[in-house]
Length: 385
Ligand code: CAA
Image 1 (tube, rainbow, N blue to C red):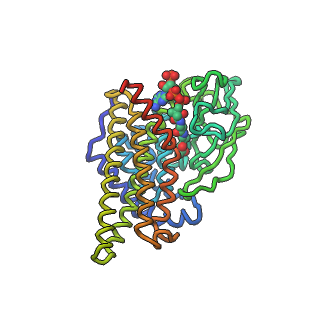
Image 2: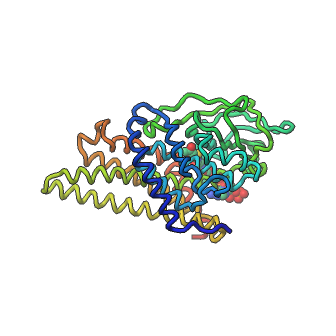
Image 3: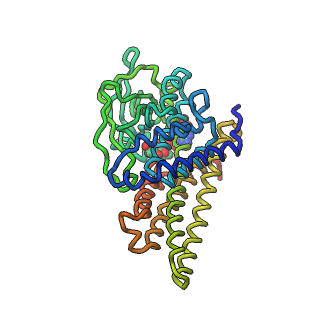
């Protein structure tokens, strides 16, 4: 049984994340947004201090931290640059998923590439053009051929896809009739024949994060790259997303905190009078809601740690609640921040304008708010609640 990371060790990692966020990431954020630039150098800087493998055991180059360590670190990163935070979130998810479900051989081949920054980032390929929220309807196929599998299909909305060196790809090893039981998970690298990277999507926000389709055209991958066994790919994906939803919630909290900082600054510049009082009231409300979102994320992260130690069963419901509340809160806080700042708030040079666009994306990826509501309802009924 793994030993929990001590609270002071988590505090030290989070302090390191904050320092790197303030010194290295924040100064780049506006430029990345304006020029849609993917910050390879930022991921290398995060890897240098272990932040691309926070929960990965130290023998694979990670920090051996807790899910709470990861969540709090990602909030700090997102507060400075949400585009970098999403890439870091997915990379941590990919590394952690390989450690959890992969063989020693598979972990040894791919996880150190992620934690060291050699791979720049990791990507998670589940969605398809006709399989977004209904992930189990995916159509990409993986057909066994001798010592290989041959993959065909298209994966959509792949975060960091044009830059990643390691991809987890879900594909069907049994016909559609087998439903989610026919899905398997593979590790792919972009140098494989038949692996193609499409044109970057033009999104509303997170413009420094790269999002592309990935095409698999007779893509031949060694059978050794199958994660676990055939047929457990959907469970692997859902387990990964339980963790990913906590970190996207954490990221949303970082965005909300950045917007609150801008509102507070504006408040200080407002002369005493009814307007200042009204702004103070608004700030208090947004701060209270953001703290509630942080507590939900922290609770889900602590439960995930307990689940990994076998102390509790699933944390699916808490992860979905954290993602739903935190991302909807970030959307509301950033929108309100724009209104409170008035004309300045809609100026492209103003940080809250970017934060509002970045927050908008968080309610959609890793399961939309509708999907989170569905998951919460189902989990409550499943538990007989
Ligand atoms: N953990 C472990 N296993 C789980 C699970 C979980 N959280 N949730 C479901 N499963 C298992 C179930 O136990 C079941 O297995 P058995 O039949 O063996 O018991 C199996 O998976 C199927 O479960 P469901 O019947 O609940 O599956 P479903 O098809 O009805 O799922 C859904 C519905 C929850 C909406 C799911 O499709 C879903 O989460 N959709 C959203 C997909 C999503 O979040 N995509 C994000 C893309 S990735 C991304 O955005 C990353 C990025 O780059 C930023």
